[in-house]
Structure formats: structure tokens, C-alpha cells
Length: 262
Ligand code: LHQ
Image (cartoon, rainbow, N blue to C red; front, side, top):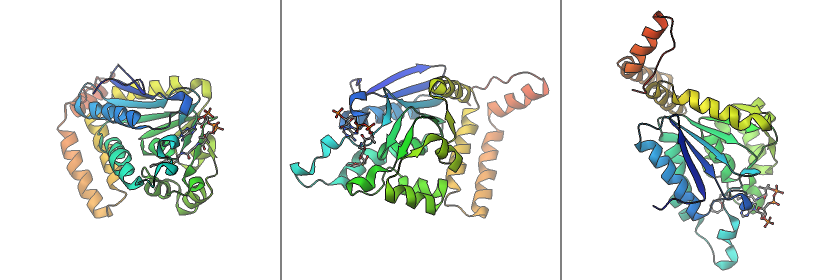
């Protein structure tokens, strides 16, 4: 695929930074941006040198969800199920199954699918001025991009229904207080903090971090017994990793570990 200006991709210190780049449309998704973002996450799956992904938006918004100009019902009755199946669901699956940390820096408004993509990331920081809007109710739609799954799990059914049924904006600070995101950060510090976090995680024991992500996600549907078995199996793998050996040696030698992600 040709590189697309709709996603800016840069790589440094093991971090693949992906910036949604349609600022005039508040970084809402058209087909080109979908395919380019997907290509970025596929690259992160493929390349061992990439050990964390940092997702953010250009300009004043993070993402306003689907580009509604592309989905004008006056041009014929759309099959939104097809849109979801073709574009959004593959993206969500790529984010959730990537066994490397995905950090999201929500630099401004995150609406509709844009909000729920931010919530699907592993560690989500937001600028204090950012807002999360389950905008779907305003246009007669149902929350997608995993929102009906993640919202009740993160904040409980009462708050999930309140946000989804009213489409009321939720500020970053309250989002952090409710446990919807990891942390609200002063606007001017957002990217510096997000980059530092992504760089720190990219230098971590990637295999162990990836399996940690897998285990926590699996807990959403597993019984305690199944989860205990999963922890045993994953710890067996982690215990054989080079990074475990390095972590313990570094501790005993009172030095900083140098993890290779293996
Ligand atoms: C936009 C958009 C936008 C196009 C702002 N599209 N231009 C999945 C399957 C298939 C179809 C449907 O959707 C989905 C999933 C979804 O994501 S559904 C939800 C879609 N998103 C929305 O409903 C949000 C629509 N946008 C808004 O409510 C507001 O723009 C927010 C609250 C995000 C920001 O408000 P403001 O800060 O007041 O900005 P604004 O409304 O003035 O927007 C600035 C420009 O961006 C404006 O263009 P203009 O040419 O007038 O400057 C907007 O038209 C454009 N824009 N969102 N989604």
C-alpha cells in the first residue's frame, strides 16, 4: 500500500507513533485513513523492532468517529453493518490482539468510534481539555468499535448507559476519576508524557507485557479457575524468557535491566 497522508507514521526507540491526520475533519475516518491505520497496526504486529504503539491525533481533535460526509443516507440506504465488519472491527481486533502496549494520547475531542478506539487502547492519557462523547445516540446509532463491551466493564452499567443514551460529553478529568482512562494530563504536557510512557514501555520486557495484556483481557470472560490456569501457563512461558533472566540478574546486581523484548 502507498503511504497515506491521513496517517503520519514515525518510529523511534521502539515506538511506532501513528497520528490521525485529517485535522480539517477532526480526524474523522474515511476509507483511506482506515486502511492506513490498519496498515500501521499490522506493521506493529509484524515487526519485532516495534515494541509499543503511540496513537494520537493532529490538530485540535483526537477523532470525531466516522466521516459523516461519507455516509450520507440521502445517497441511498447504507449497510453500516458492512462498514463495521470491513473497517472498524478489524481495527479493534488488531489493537486488542497486539501483544505489545498501545498507548493513546487523546489530544482533543474523541467522539463516536473515535472515543471507543481510544478506550480500546491499553493505556489512555487525555489532555485535560479533551472530551469523550458517545455521539451515536445523536444520530440514531448504537455505540460501536467495542463501546458496548468496554464501557460497562470500565465504568459499570449505570454510567455506561448514562453516557451512551444521553451522548453527554465527559471531560478528561472525570473520565480518569471514573476509571475510563488511565490519566488526565495538562494539555501542554500531554505529548511529552505520552512519549515518555511509550518509550519506557517499549524498553520493557515486551513478551511479559504482551502476555499481561492478554491475561487481563481474558479475565473479562474467564472464571477464576480458568484465569488461574492461564496465569500458570503464561508465567511458565515468561519464566523461560531472556528478559526474566535479565530482570532477576539486574535486581541482584543492583543495576538497571536491559530488556530485549524476548
Ligand atoms: C466532521 C465530523 C464527522 C465529518 C466534525 N464527519 N465532518 C460507524 C459506521 C458507519 C457510519 C456511522 O458511524 C460509525 C461510527 C461513528 O463514529 S458514529 C459517530 C460519528 N461522529 C459524530 O456523530 C460526531 C460528529 N461531530 C460532532 O458532534 C462535533 O463535530 C464534535 C462534538 C466532535 C466537535 O464539535 P466542535 O468542536 O463544535 O466542532 P465542529 O462541529 O464545528 O466541527 C469542525 C469541523 O469538523 C466541521 O467542519 P466545517 O467545514 O464546518 O469546519 C465539521 O463538519 C467537521 N466534522 N465531525 N464525524
